[in-house]
Image (cartoon, rainbow, N blue to C red):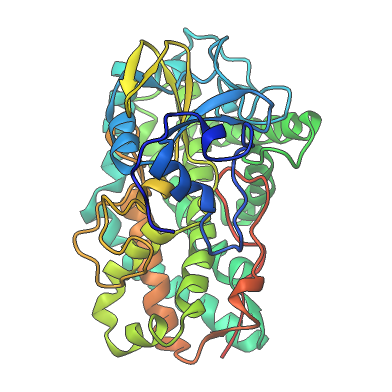
Length: 421
C-alpha cells in the first residue's frame, strides 16, 4: 500500500478501529502489517495498546524513528514508575526489568544500572566495542565459513527436507558468540530456552520467566567467577580487568541473548525472503555472488517480521512528528515500518538486492545502536555465501504464504523454514 501523506491528525481511531493492540499481526510471515502504511500516511504518532494493557505511542515514519533513537532525551528507563509495560507478565517484560542479571532486583545505583545510559553506557560501549570492530570481526570470517560448511554438510547428510532454523540459523550464531565470550561448547544448547523465555511477551508465566532468569543469572555468575580467577583468550576474560563482576554478568547475558537470537531468526527470514521469489532473488545471487553484501542489507531493511521494535521513555517534554510528547510517555519506535517508508527509500515495497546506499534502521541508530551489528552482518553474509555455493538448487517446501510467524517474541521470527535441494 503506497503512503498517502494527507495528515488526518494523530488519532489512530481516525485510521484504524479503536485503540489497536500492538504488535500488529502480519498477514503472512513475510508481509508487513497494513497498519504500518496506514499510520505512516495519516497518523505517524499513534496511540496503541501493549500486551500488558498499557498504552504507548507508536512511531512509524523513518525520520521520526531515526530522530527519536538518536535523541538522548529518549532513554531506556523502561522501569520508571510511569513507564508502560510491554509484556503481560507481572514484571512488564524484558524492557521493564531493571536487570536481567539479578532477576529484576537491581537498585538504580548499582553498577549494572548505570550502564544503561549516560557516561556509564558510553564507557561500556567503548570497552565492548573493541571486540566488534570491522577488522576483528572480519578475522572471524574463516572460522564462520568453516562452521557453516560443516553445518550444511550435516544438513545434506540428514537429507531433505531441512528446517533452516535449528539446522543452521540457531547453531551458527550461538557457536560464534559462545566462542567469542569463552562459553564452553557443551553449554551452548541451554541458551535457547533462556532467551526464548525472557524475550517472549505473552507465552510464558511469570514463574517460568523468573526461573529462567535465575538459572541464567546463576550460570553467568559462575562463568564470570571462572574467568576472573583463570582468564582465557576470550572477551569476558579481557573485560574482567575493567569491569566489576556484576557488570561482566550483565554484559555476558546481554551479548549471549542479543548475539544469537536476532541473527538466528534473521537467517531463517533471509532465506525465506530470497526463496519466496526465487527467480528474481535467489537466482540473481547465483548469477552474481558479489551482490551478497547489499542483499544482506536489503534483507535487513525489507524484513516485515522483526518483532516489537524499540521502546523509549520520554524524560522531558518534546515534539515529534508534530505531536507534543509529555514527560513520562512510553514510545515504541518501529524501525521496520520506517524501513518501508517511501519518503526514505525509493521502491520501499520492493526487495532490491543491489540497493545502495541503504541507511536502514534494522540495527537502530544513535548511542544505543546494536554494538554487534558488524558481527551479525558477517554471519549473515557468510551463511548466504556458503548456501549459494553448496546448495544452489535450494527451494522452499510449500508456498511462502503458508510460512507462520512466531508469536509473542520481542525479536520476531518464523516457526519453520523448510527447504529442499
